[in-house]
Amino acid sequence: MITPGETIGILGGGQLGRMLAKAAAQLGYRVHVYAPEPDSVAAEVCAQFTCAHWDDTAAMADFAADCAVVTYEFENVPVPPLRALGQVPLYPNARALEVAQDRVNEKEFVEQFGGHCAPWMAVDTAEDLNDALIRIGSPGILKTRREGYDGKGQWRIAYDHEAEGIALGGQAMVYEGLVSFAAEFSVILARGQDGTIVFWDSAENVHEGGILARSTVPAGPLVSAQVDQARDLARQIADALDYVGVAAFEFFAGEDGPIFNEMAPRVHNSGHWTIEGAVTSQFENHIRAICGLPLGDTRLAATRVEMRNVIGDAAEDWAAILSDPANHLHLYGKAAARPGRKMGHVTRLTF
Image 1 (cartoon, rainbow, N blue to C red):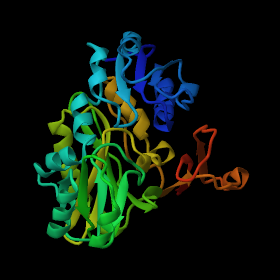
Image 2: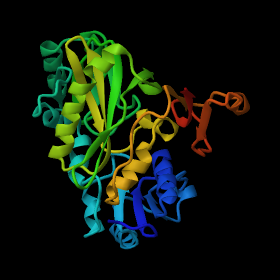
Image 3: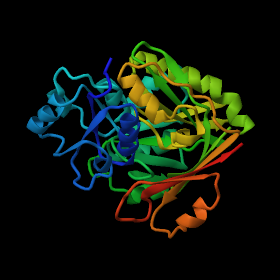
Image 4: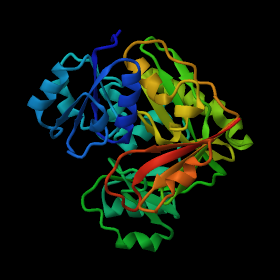
């Protein structure tokens, strides 16, 4: 067990790291953030900050020497440099990163446990893409196998001929056929070092332009009817990975059951509502899990919870938002607003 007063290392310096650091401080831990970007919003709320590239093995080793345990706030941390952590525990483990960082690896892994994905094919060449369009058809979405999030690294193909203008540029990609669904939802769990798993209520999610706009709990009846099946798949995946920490699994609610979309081996935007809306937030339970502490209660703390993302450079009247006492405003401290960038979120509780 990692005792209060010891240091937790966080790889990545964005808003998820910021909220993890705040949860860690609440439990009495110091936090050391490692990130390549000097303008880290997580660094503003931590005890120590190392600004260095991922492949700077000397800096990574020095960082590890200050930490009792290391975690990460996004899934695109390169795996090879993590060898410099030495014997310092990394939770979730590197295997979880390897699976989630590559969309083909992820789909193959999930299908081992009976998970249903949209029809897909790996695409490495223009010929592969043509073959995928023949076998799967259009409409569909061409995605980079690695990286890409919030709609980045994706190209929608409504008709076969639209693929002619896409230059693959040697990138490994995957083509997914579009599926019919009535709603989107997420399953978020925390798994402790002893294998104990707890789930939060599943939020029904609405995306706009490939970016999460709103999450609402409780979800509607169609989603609620599919949650148990989706949880069973998430539990199998977490156990197979010997996962420790919080993980999110995104699903489409299809006519014949849940369709797996993707997993995130970390705390997740669709779980931000848990800060005020659950007895224990996803951030606190992640810290509890990686430190070997008992997991907290995940029950709803209100009758209804809605989380709305503050996205881009649209002007917001913060005073007007806070004039409703049911609203809770979280701003991430980002200096530069731009279209598509998550600047904060607002959570509204109904009792």
